Structures are given as C-alpha cells and as structure tokens.
Length: 462
Image (cartoon, rainbow, N blue to C red; front, side, top):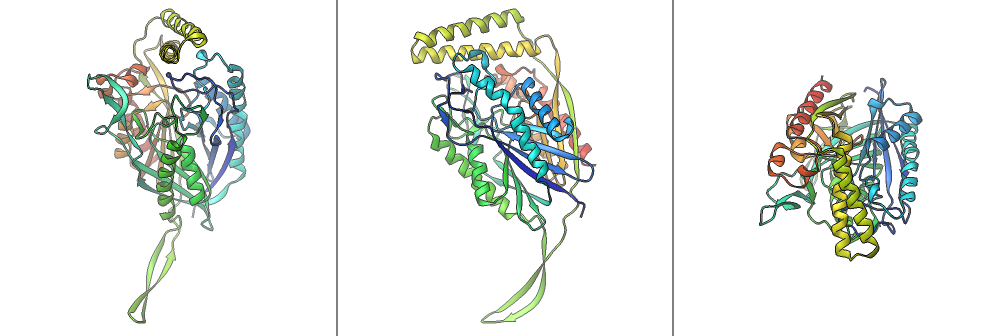
C-alpha cells in the first residue's frame, strides 16, 4: 500500500454578540444578539510522499479577494504549504457576520473589522493543527440522497423571476461522502458534500447560525466519529425547501435530516475492503453456510492538484462615477431612514442600498475589463476528484461536469478561494432574474467554466 496520510484541525471563529450580521437586503436589524451554535474553521490535511494538500472550510458567507488572500497567506506562513495546494472554501451561511457588505453598516463596524482581522491567524491555526495530527489512512467514498433542496428560480403568475420553489427546475439531491479511517479503521475525518443555499435563517433572524451545515457536522460527528468537513456544492440556483424564516428549529431540522443521511452513507463504507470465502456447512436446525471475511488492501491513493485561471467573459457595466453616485445616494437614504423611518421603509431602503452597493463593487472590480481570470482547482484523492471554483456556479454546471468526469466520485463546489459572483447558464441569462442581474459575467461563462473543469479532470486522471 502506498503510504497516505490525513489529519484534521479546527478553530472556533464564532462572532461575538453585537457583531454586524448580514446576508439580506430586507434585514432591518444590523447586529447579531449571539450565536445559536459555534462557528468553525475546519481543516483537512492530505499528504503522500510527494506533496501535501490543505482543504479548509469555514462557516462564513464568503470573503472578497483581499481577505481571502490574507487568509490563504496566513495558512501558507503557518504550514509551509504552497498556494496551489491550498483550498479555502466557505459554507455560504447567510446568518453569520457581515463580512462583505461593509458600506451599509452604521452600527458596530469596528466589531466586524476586528472580527475580520482576527480570522487569518485563527483559520491558519486550524490548518497547522491538521498538519500535526496526520495519521496513515485509507479512504472510501459513497453517495446517498436528501430532499431538503429545490431549484429556487421560479416565476410568479405575472412572469417575474424570483427566488422561491421551482419544483420542475434542475436540482441535484445527491449527498456525497468521503470517509478517512486510520489503519485500525477508526474514523479520522468525514467529508460531506451537498448543494443548497444556507438561507434557511433569513432577515428576521437575529442569531448567528452556521445554518444547516453546522447541524450536519454535529450529527455526523456524533453518529460516525472523527471530524466532519462540509463542502458546499454548486448552489447558485439551489435553495432549501423550507427557508426564509426566523425559526431556529428550521435549520436544525434540515441539518439533522441531511446529517443522518450522510452518517448512514459514511457508516456503510468499508475503507478496508473485504471479500467472503466459503468455509463449509454447519448442521443445526437448518444447514447454515459458514463464511470467513478476508481483507484486501485497496488500490494506492494518488494525490494530485491542479490550479488555473480560466478566462470568463464579463458583462457591460455603466461608468464608475454613475455606479458610485447611485450607491452613495442609496446608502445615505438608508442611514437617514434608519433614524426615523418605519420598518417597511427601512426594508425597502436596505434592499435598494444593498443592490446599489453590490453593483458598484462589481463596476469597481470588473468595469474596465472584457474578461477575467477565474480560479479553478482540482484535487485528486484516489478515486475521488474535488473540483472547486470561485463564486456561485449553477447546479447544471456541476451536473455537466460530474456526468462527463473520468472519476467515479466528483465533488464540484463553488464558494472556494475567494470572490463573489453568480455564474448562470445561458438559459438563465435568457430568462433573466436575480442571479443574472447580480452576475458580473456574460452569457457563455458557465460553459467555459465547465469545459475547463473537464480538461483538468482528464489531466489529473492520467
């Protein structure tokens, strides 16, 4: 057996009470009152004789490239692992700290800045710990199914595209699981991969929650053992069946449902394969066949990493001065209404300010460009391939990549290595709606992304 190691580490990154909370344009309150569950950064270190790879996932909606680069740089400094071999992913919970819409914060901005500044070293500590906990391991992968998700791009009776429940739309309810055991078959780590926006807890909720991914980890660790990592899939157009609520029990229920299915899959896997050998027949009340189970070492676990930037086409934007002026106007209106407006007026003003500021951010980042290099990473771990992209790809892209992948198990994810932006399919651009309006990309971006992912998969499969 080719020697292969895995180790896990974890750091608490729970926001303090009073930290600005965000993820919703319709949200009236600004600061979270406390945490319903802890927030974690969890790291998985993988190593063979040639190289080491770090996969780090955090309970966060996401970070821009500036803060992502700071986090990855801290991981590099603490571990010595090269940039190409680090994957930093976010669960994309919408009820965590407001780490990306700072322009509209008027209460507690110093707390969120302090929180952001603390994260690089705390997250790097989890990666460092994973390095120190390396065990020689075997792995196995399997799949299950869970129905907590639905395509969220639906049309109203008037034909407007909104975020809701489209029961006829594309969805992938596959639960993908990888279990790593030490040589005594004790579980070291379980990776759970699923695609669904963590938007169960919405604008009415004042508690910090990791949403359903936090419950998934808790359930899997209780039922299976080891440390659980949750990797978000391609959830750009996928949401929860039951969501947009302030009821805390809603996310706990969904996470428990998914966690139990993941645990079922994990416990059914054999990391040390067995085959039966017939021994003979024992005469009892009935003749009983006797068997012996013989173990056999699995195939060697190959570790391979590719990272590249695929050029994706960008949409046309208005002039920067115009976008900036609109954002400043809407932000000023929001700040004024917060002082003396009604709840309904605050919701409307917050929505307008949120949209204006995200558009201004896009113009600032991409306005003078025709295309941008978009980071894609592919990690091969034996029979499993983990493909990740920045931003929010649609589930159709993940399905296309998985269907044509040369690997038995392909886990396609967005929300990795920084950056925001929906990557809709051509059909979604034709239909219009929120994701298309909020995307920095032009039609054709998703198709180019899928083609590059498949090229990388074929290369690491050699």
